[in-house]
Length: 437
Image (cartoon, rainbow, N blue to C red; front, side, top):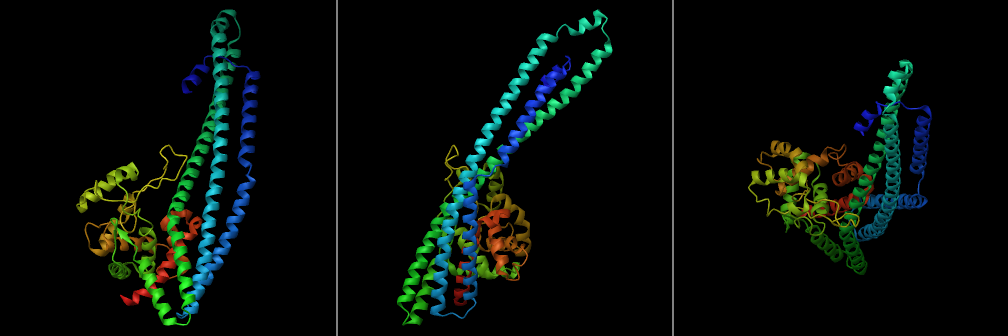
């Protein structure tokens, strides 16, 4: 396009043509504004339903928090289970609605991008034809001016007008390109959000399993109401069995080892051990994806060099060292995936994120090099990251919920309230059993 603009400088241009060009540009941007301003009614309906579900979930969570403060009893445990069952059922509905909403948004953006591309192509074709016409007609005009005695002031006036027009045309072109790129970025962001949601849908199998466990436990406790001691012992045993499902390097972590590491980390990070274990349980206990992947197939290539450097310093073979699997639920992607795995160890840090905490971990633990597959180093790293959120070190449960959500999704943490709730649920469980270790 820059070369085309340089050719324009050789030829005069008439105001009528300028008017046509800017009339088309005006129509284009008016159309663009109208398209982008429209909000699909279906998405509004979905958003309303999601907001309503979130309010109901919050109500159940508050009820659970209040009941958790009471002295342990069979009736209280049954009430907590009942509330948690209802909450999980609502969270599953919420995730399904969020995925449906994102599908609608992505489809709408794809239509907008297609329309924008057609308009951009049409405008470029129009400019090309116009420039070609000027080139064919303008070849003899300079000579005619020189030999005809026509005033040079008229000629230079036309040149100045042309240069002004060139700037306006270039500005229009840049605006069109910026709009097109902005829409492409929006589509990519939406696809990333969809991949996140689809990943959560894959992870949701753990949530659904927890729902079944809660229902089973509720039935058991209700049936044992005449023998409260036995029921509470069975509840504790079931809870301990569930909390034991934490892994590192694809292998189970001994619960006693995890509790010991959490108590070690709390002295260095001032983050409650049950909260650390709650995050650990959700992060590394979700299915088998902790150690199911390899860096060449599951990790973003941009992370490879950092990952290999970490492995080399620790003495691990990067080819054989497991990382989280790439979740492949995105049907819109060519390979069916669209997102990346590659998180390391129990705390599930990406290589670049780990490097941001490495020196801090080494400073407080004295362990050099820090090892993302070490349960102690992992929980210290987790504590440092979670503890940076205000209120976490003071034990504020709202701060815990925010920090847990941010651990998963950064600034988008509020979209993933179920994750925070699961962390708090498991944290409460760990608090009950830690006295035994």
